[in-house]
Each structure stands twice: as structure tokens, then as C-alpha cells.
Length: 284
Image (cartoon, rainbow, N blue to C red; front, side, top):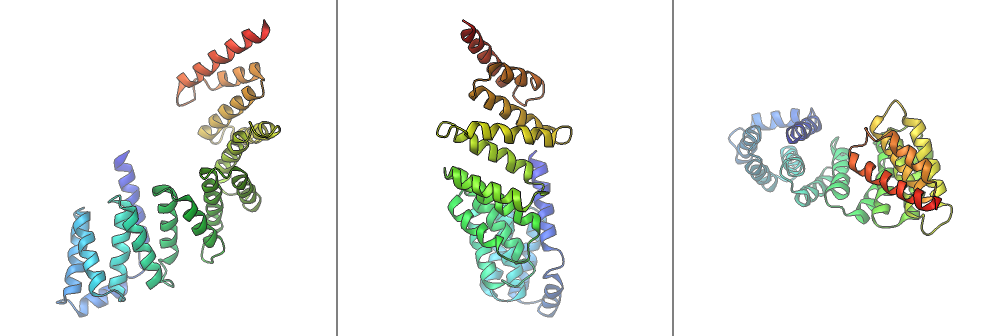
């Protein structure tokens, strides 16, 4: 699993660099082959290819310090930031690097990718949800992003509100995202989370469990035979909601249908035992 994550990180790193600064860089290095800056840059490239990432970043940063506004300086800043984000687990440093890159190269072809990386760090790595909301709301109004990207931005805003315990605000954003991007690949995830948000309100609002149930049932129908993992999760959540609505037999029967498919089979067994005990008490 670790090797796969490393490969994906390397591929993402490589794709983000292809063809953007390279022609300028080659001319620049060719004309100033003896300069301190070019030597540091080429050393950084060699160290990076050897997977000596800390040393490579140190050399990239020397290039940035010596030539901050040049093409090679911007390329070095980009590579240092991406390496810190993807290979060194230094999200704070990477975030500062991307912020500086945006300040110096806001019109470059890599600027949208830098903004995406900043959002990823704020949301997934640092769990700074208030900042993530502010960041993604700006990106929603920014040009240069695909519709699928903007669907993700809506989803991340909704999820951030949920993490901040702003349940109603998260519901508002999930519904807005689903209405605006009905064919997005993020819709199943948004439906699941929207159902969970209504479920979370169940103890406070009478109709919340019923709303959650309808969403989980719709998600189950949408993913049946196509997205097995999401389908199983939808069935689990539907059964849990039925239990909350005191529909014990229906919940028990649903749990049984995923007894062999749920990632944690013991959880299903425990839930079924508990439901059986409740049904016995109810019959007395």
C-alpha cells in the first residue's frame, strides 16, 4: 500500500511538471552552465532522482533564495513545495511554498494546480476546515477549473462545515452541490454524507431520520450492481436508520443481506444480536 501511494505521488509530481517551465529552464541552464544557481538546481535534480528528498529540497531552496523571480527560481519553488507535500510529510512548509508560488507566478500554467494542492493540504493534511472553506469558496468563483473540480470544491466546503459541527450548513452545501453537478462522480459520496448529516440531526429534529432513510435508499438504488463498496455502505446506513426509527425487523433483515460483504463482519453480527434482543423484549 505504501509503495502504491509513493508511485501515485511520483506520477502526480511528474504530471504537474510536464512541459511548463522546462523549455525556459533548458535555455537558461545552457547559457549559464557555470553559475551557482544552475549548479544548485542540477544538484537538486540529481538528488531528487536518487530519492534523497530532504537534500533535494535544500538545494531547490538555495536556488529560490539566489534567484527568486526567475523561471528557474519558480521551478525550484514548485518542486520543493511538491516534494514537501508528497514525499516529506511537511504540509505546513509545502503550504507556505505554494502560497509564495501563487504570489510570484499567479498567471503561470501551474497556478491552478498550486491552488488545488493548497486546498488538499488545508482539508486533508492539516484539518484546518475554516481555512479550507474560505479557500474553496474562492476557487468556486475562479476561472480555469473544470466542472468536476468545482463539484469537489462544493463537496469539500460541505464536508468542512460538517467537521465544524455546522450540520445544517453542511446540508445546504451538499444539496447545492448535488443540484448543480448531478452527474459528478462525487454525487454518491455527497449523497452518503448528506444522509449522515440528516442522521446526525435525528435526535434534534423529528423528520431527520426519515430524510436520512430516503437518501440512503436512493443511494442504494443508484449504486446497486455498479459501486459495490458504496452500495454496501448505503445498505448499512439504511439499516442503522431503520433501527433508529424502531423498525427492528426490517433493520435486522437488511443487516443480514450484507453480512458477508461488510468490511467488518463482526460489527454486523453485533448489530444483529442487539436487534434480536430488542425484538424479543418488544414481543413480551
